[in-house]
Image (cartoon, rainbow, N blue to C red; front, top):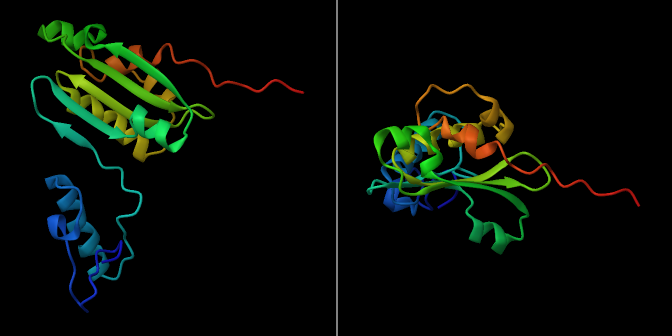
Length: 172
């Protein structure tokens, strides 16, 4: 099967578990969109999809993009923003302050590499970051956004307030 989800049999396409895609309903739905568009003359692929992961436990665990282990394994330099959920005002208001929030930001640009949250409404916070990543927005856009108070997304402003500046090389 190729990244257009065409199998080796003419006119046969694969989706979801049959395609070997990550086993999430939201990924199977995207596989459907890939196949639908290609059946209608498009050239959509599964290449470079930004697939979110959510585990609806208590508290929620949500992640998109790279985590620290993956970035290190790939040799990707990053800046790390991390804070406890106790710093998220919505978590405080709900009395659910267990967990943490962290974001990996490219060391040489302001591109968001990945995001992980373990905390109340973490999937909703992750969705805001995923949207920024899909749109190619720098982390500074989230940092400067006026989010509704109190939402978990508002916590992104506090998370990103202390991100170290890009390390500039000194002239020789």
